Length: 198
Image (cartoon, rainbow, N blue to C red):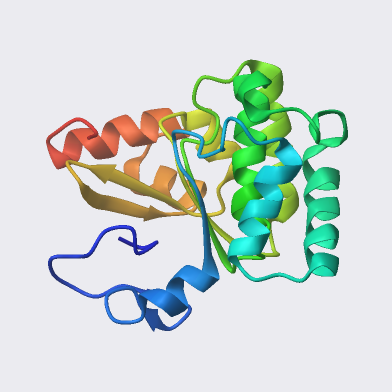
């Protein structure tokens, strides 16, 4: 709903002051999204995937080239730029998917389970890329990995049964729950809410 891929049935949400229900065109121009299932075009090369998204946003050839260079540098894509996406590992596909979400210079980036199924090294590389974006754009990241939330998040929202039960920094959530570490904090807050995470 926040990315305008679904229409809300009730309530209001705003991205950078624009209503997701009434100003979807404006919101879509402000956000980037990398879904849990990587949204790369399998038969296109990495470069062609990036060019496709830049074209959708109407970038000039010069700006497209600059943004592709930016993504190549951020995600270390030099060796795979001319490889077809279907030949890439899961980790590379995830990087390309996030690069596609970032190429439009979004104000808000949504990452849905960005490291699901990745090995330890690929996960750490993505963490480094996400950390390098801090302070430049707003990132909303969903994850089931407590360590990932601890490493990447400035503020954490704990959801139980589809409802936000607690929001704050890790230190604030630990103080609220009386526990140490996000996993223990989550278990305590989820237990108080009377259910497991959905």
